[in-house]
Length: 390
Image (cartoon, rainbow, N blue to C red):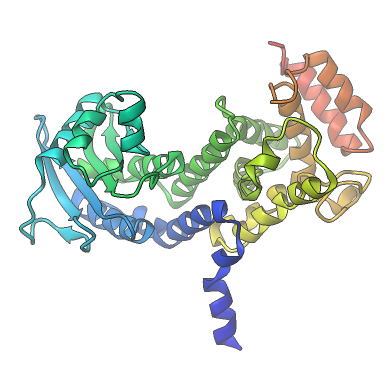
């Protein structure tokens, strides 16, 4: 019986929509390695830990380079590398030659001090000459690449560099994930005291995942971060304190994670969903629940992703909870989420004016929203001038 339970845990991603598997894999890695990330004290330790994480996350990627910038110069010293699919090696112990094409790519990113993502080299070179992509053409086997600088106090101290012969191997989610890892590890590259606590590492990663959800849905202005911060502010005004505030913020950041399991044709449809499409859309809180409940540091952040579409009168989904059956934090978040959505442009409508949004909330107290919490949120809107720019 124990063996069967363990096997089910290992095979969980086989039951998830394909778009959600990378998120579960990343969360699982961060849960496993975050205690070690919090203990990094010097550069070689940081690079070795990065090498472990990347070798698991990008097992299929042919080339991985982890490099450190030489202090006071433009030079760069590759410390760990995986070349031609052969396991990651410590270059102090292995004689591996780095090609000129790779060195040119790295020098370009060091100069620009910004990430560089090529999804499909052949297509980008054919359609339009992309800045910096010409040097990738020197190596005809490379079709996609991702380079992320590691920066401390505006100085580049290292570089994460992945490249693959597969078109489309890297995307914006990979970029956000590696940026977050770089932010966590970079201080150790110059032997700074590693001052990120475990909870801060988790928050950095949660924000990266929330930004990935925003990016997928075209929310360039940061819907997830915006509603997470306002939900935290509103909850603290209501007396929520301690670890509950952190759990609430993380749940709000990940509230729409499950939408990445919905087909784009349904998620971005500009006309009314039919019955079958609506049934599929209503599955997204359950998709989020299936991922988050298996991640120990997120287990207390489930209530918002799972319950934020429940309604006070019981007409919501996925479980049709009513009144105070709905967790408090989900009732708090529902007000903030709808408020932000009404004030934002959507594919099917323009943003509402503040007065119209306020009237909508007021008219739905006692049906969609907790009436007492709704009254307090309307007070917050009035007292702090929320939405006044509209």
